[in-house]
Structure formats: structure tokens, C-alpha cells
Image (cartoon, rainbow, N blue to C red; front, side):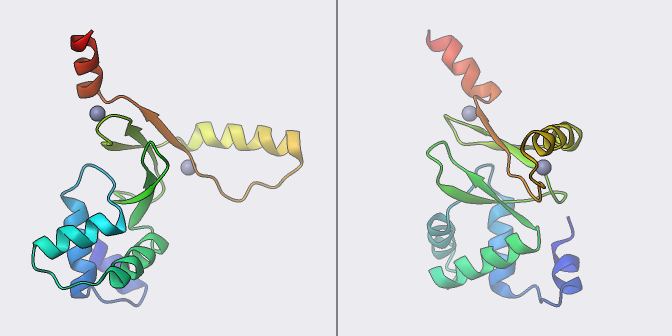
Length: 143
Ligand SMILES: [Zn+2]
Ligand SMILES: [Zn+2]
């Protein structure tokens, strides 16, 4: 995804804090909390306050550049999105998260729920938890 282009299109600059947060998230296979992002940036000598981290994440999430991904204890974390709206499957052991698309399946479910409830569905959030291949393998080996 062209982060700079999307920021520019929406009237925002790729400022140093935004660039630092994006570059950090690019290196992570797991969702990071604002505190973890703040600490990791401090270790790299980036002077970015926790409030700025929160603000930056809020903007990037609003623009669809970053997704909220929950850990197995249901704490929210943040990951870079690769192409707009996707869902995540998260490993319960190592918290590694992978994106997947489910548009057709979700459409069917939404139609059924609308029929059953007479609600008009406007949005959805779907996330799956499981074991990644590595952790599954370790579990089998440990038994
Ligand atoms: Zn795992
Ligand atoms: Zn969806």
C-alpha cells in the first residue's frame, strides 16, 4: 500500500511521527499496543510521546492504513493493512496475525442476519483465533 499517497490524498503529510510508526509496524508480525509502539520507538531514540502515538494510530486507522487486531485476551493492538478492508486470524500462542478476505461469505451471512432480524447491517468486525502452523507443530511435538 502506498501510505504516502493515501495520506497526501486525504490532505495529510507523511510527517516524521507518522513515518516512524508506519516503519515500526512494517517490521512486526504481531499487533502492537500503543505502549509497545511508544517503547520500541524510544529504544530507537525517536522522541514521540504516548499521546502522539495514540493520535497517529487514530488517524492511520481512520484512513484504513492500520487495522485494529485483538490479542487472545481481547486487548486491542495495531497492524499495518496491506489492501483496505480485510480480516485477521491471530495465533493464540505467539500472537502472529495473518490477513484473510471473506467478502462473499460475509455478504451471505449479512443477508441472512438482515432477514432474520429486520436490522439493516452497516458494518462488521470479524476476527478468528487459532494456532499458526509453527505453534501447532510445537504442540504436536510436545505431546
Ligand atoms: Zn503461533
Ligand atoms: Zn469484512
